[in-house]
Length: 219
Picture 1 (cartoon, helix red, strand yellow):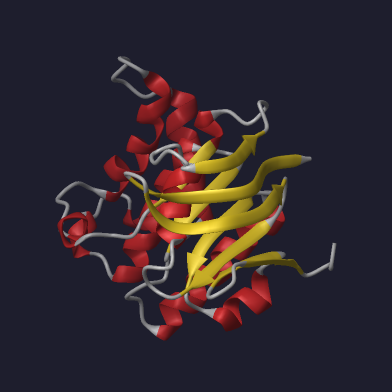
Picture 2: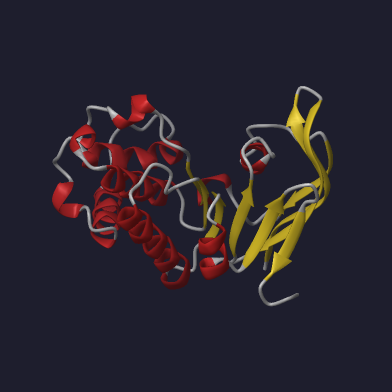
C-alpha cells in the first residue's frame, strides 16, 4: 500500500528554497534512506513529512489511512537531552503522551507495551537507571523505545547513529533492521552512511547536484 507520494516537491523555509524537484514514493514496509551532504535539505524534508514545515510547491500526498499517532520520530540528540535527569522508564513512557490528551496516568496495557519494547531493545534491565548515566548507544535505544511507544506503523529517524562508536552504530543498525523485518515497520532514515544504505535500504533518496530516488528492486 502506498503511504506517501511526492511529486515535483519544493521544500524550504519562509519562501527560501532548500531543495526542489523531489519525486519519490514510500510504500508500506519500505526502508528508505535519505542521504546527502549537510545543508542539502534532508532534515527539511523530514520536517515537511512530519507536518512541521509547510511545503513550498508541488504535492505531498499522504494516505488518509495513516494517522498521526502511527508515526514515530527519533530526532538527533542535543547536549541538553543527553543530560536529562529522568529514569529510562520515565522517558520511554512519555512516548504515549501524544496519544493521551489531558490524561496524565498510564494504563496497565501501556506499561506492559513499554516494558515489551525495552525488552526488545535490551534495555529493560536499565529501566530504573538515570538516563544521563547511560552510554550513547544505550541512550539511543531508550529514545527508540520511546518512539515505538508513540507509533506502531512508521518511524522517522534523523541520524540515529551520529556520535556513536563503531560497535554501537552496528548494534543500532541491526536493531532498526530487525524492527523493519520482524515488526513490519516502515522506516525513513536520514544518514551519511552510504554503505549502510546499500546494505539495509529498500530505497534511497539521494540529495546532490541532482536529487535521485532509486529502489533496489528497480521498480
